[in-house]
Image (cartoon, rainbow, N blue to C red):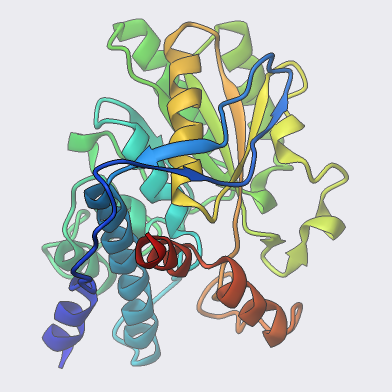
Length: 319
């Protein structure tokens, strides 16, 4: 039964007879900027193959997380488990703009990131299930994914603790002169951590190629951004560091935004704060039903109106 579940999760739906031209221009929600003289245009070109690739990739991540939910409820996955469904457009768009020369580090919501950095769904499930084929031979579990070969450094279990490490990765890129950037990801709940601002200060002083990425999924555990953040415009939090706001539910917007952000850093301008506004469908973790601080209607409204996979499906069909 387990092998059937894993096999089903790995397969992504296939849609044929897609007939739009080799490259089509799509518009999306405009970017917002902070201390930036110019912003990227809210348009992007994409081919049929690219759109289908984004759709399949996001669908794979979604199916993986839904299967992880099932396995957890069957008590085959133990310990902490934080799911990424709803947020798939972010890592998919980020990877479309980067190469494996660039580094990524994130929080404990990291299953999709492990696969985006080249690991297989089977091996990632292996880590969740405590099997030897996992990246940490089954000893790290859900929160401690890792793939140094392709510059993925976790998977970190302490809130915000990955941010100074991400600044360190950016220092290494600059020191080695390899042209890479560090994408340092954290949630809105971690945005108030003091170590975020300490790392940002050093990155600004040394002009490190670091993109500080706040994946704003609207809730820090069970507390909404309106209640936990005096300034919920997280892209402006850098103060002396420019910022960029991106619609994190649109993979084309994320790709375009991170092409801009990565080039900003590669050009020697120092760090950049990026906020990707998104939404998580599950609770904070598997121990959180996710409905005590928000309504089911709220979740369903996002699923119906802003879901990144459904939006890409509709874009493909409409064209």
